Image (cartoon, rainbow, N blue to C red; front, side):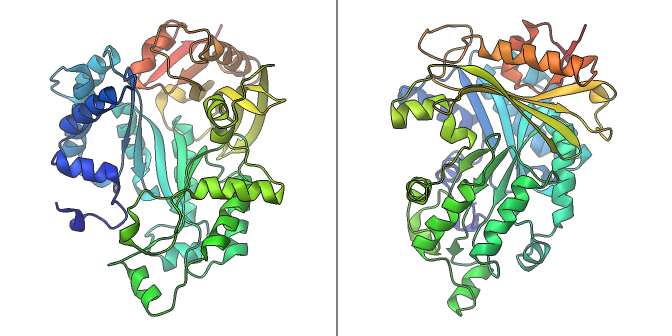
Amino acid sequence: LSSHQLHREYLYPTSMRAIRAHYDPYLQTRHRVEQLKQLGHSVDKVEFIVMGGTFMALPEDYRDYFIKNLHDALSGHTSNNVAEAVRYSECSKTKCVGITIETRPDYCLKRHLSDMLTYGCTRLEIGVQSVYEDVARDTNRGHTVRSVCESFHLAKDAGFKVVSHMMPDLPNVGMERDVEQFIEFFENPLFRPDGLKLYPTLVIRGTGLYELWKTGRYKSCSPSALVDLIARILALVPPWTRVYRVQRDIPMPLVSSGVEHGNLRELALARMKDMGTECRDVRTREVGIQEIHHKVQPYQVELIRRDYAANGGWETFLSYEDPEQDILIGLLRLRRCSPQSFRPELKGGTSIVRELHVYGSVVPVSSRDPNKFQHQGFGMMLMEEAERIAREEHGAYKLAVISGVGTRNYYRKMGYELEGPYMIKRLE
């Protein structure tokens, strides 16, 4: 494929690297790992994001080939199938700590979720764009908002972290209606994602929207109004949600209308200061970001618990934080699944840890540095509290973890064993 044959949305630097490697997953991985090493990065941990279209819509044999080669590129082993590739990847020096797959609600059904679990996938990015049915219809999404809610429910009940793509400034919405949809998105238990990518609408030549824009039937927000809109959205984000991105990484010459600044998040955060509001999402508060931007380090660290209902289940967001300075050191997402949970390993009396993450400098697995926050025991303490809540409050007799393939041995040290795609421990 040449770049102009790619879907118009997927003109990322990542896509360009894929083209250079002729879409060979093994070569893409090897080249990127070597490149990162040459830049001086520690590459003992790798997270894959399978992006650029709906991966789960591709034929099964191609998907298996692709995932097998991602794992083999880390381990150096030549596997016969995905299961073998995953087994060798578990012991690889460069560990796969997670795989994220981009998908759509209509490719996020039980069979797709089960396939993704066998790949070692731990996080889904689901294209939502809008919570309004009329907007989903007008933008030819090809699925309903109800199917979005159903996919969130199924995915979380299987243990996945759910990140949604949202697109402010779509045609026929307007600023106030945009703000209202984000209030709905964060407060309605049918939605409540774990993470968010905010992609303000871009007009790109060759799209239907380009024709609307050219004939004056669509007009993008002014740059200043867009900064205002993003600032208002960021002020609504709950402390358990992470905003991964605030604009698409698309070269500006390809954009006819839309975002004019390359640092939209930075501008929105500055505007929030003027408005007297603040962004309390996971990323803004994490210890590494606070250290870099504000030169502040945590002083008084304590365990904080936040509970909320979401997607038919009960979520507990546990974190170690310095509440005085609003700095986040580590987090854990614990879910008491709904009775509709479809995975046999999670039926009847099983709770699941959907995420465990300690922030700060990346420390090679099994090493310690007194000034770095990963591997200082915060992860272990969060797991102990999750086990206590599952046993005493959920009445669970098992706790499952959806674990990156390369971090399974970490859970084995805590008494967890592999059962299907999950690490599971019997609770005494």
